[in-house]
Image 1 (cartoon, one colour):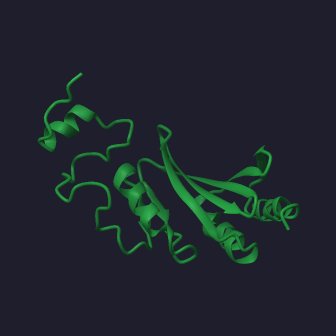
Image 2 (cartoon, helix red, strand yellow; image 1 turned 90 degrees about the vertical axis):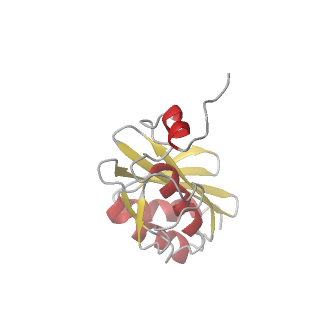
Image 3 (cartoon, rainbow, N blue to C red; image 1 turned 30 degrees about the vertical axis):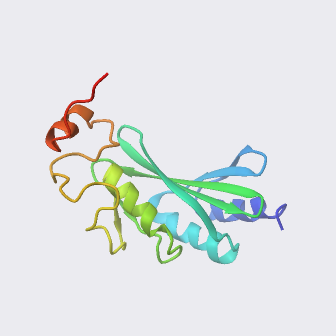
Length: 160
């Protein structure tokens, strides 16, 4: 099955208007737009039986935020990348496809401010304190300032 997996993923990537790119042996990446993400992941999980979501990673790329869904299938790893604009950091939740994604989405919501529509826990904090000020940017955005966060949360100033 493992030899066929990249070919099958490649077909679904083409249908989503993307392509599968090998980055190492048994490791590939696909970039998918938000409007095609759930359809692509549905094929990956349901049609190709890719059940192990290792993690979801979020990155601040400047104007956009990137969300990377990291899956493992037998000996293969596939990274599915999608971008959301920083001006409207919203993405579709995938918890209806991969229920375990709920905590990863909450983490990215806390740390980068991405709102995952369809995730019922977007009103809760996972990693940030409950008293995190609403007007303070999420801590992993490039525009966030550590000194301002410490001051606003009354954590004192870091010592060298």
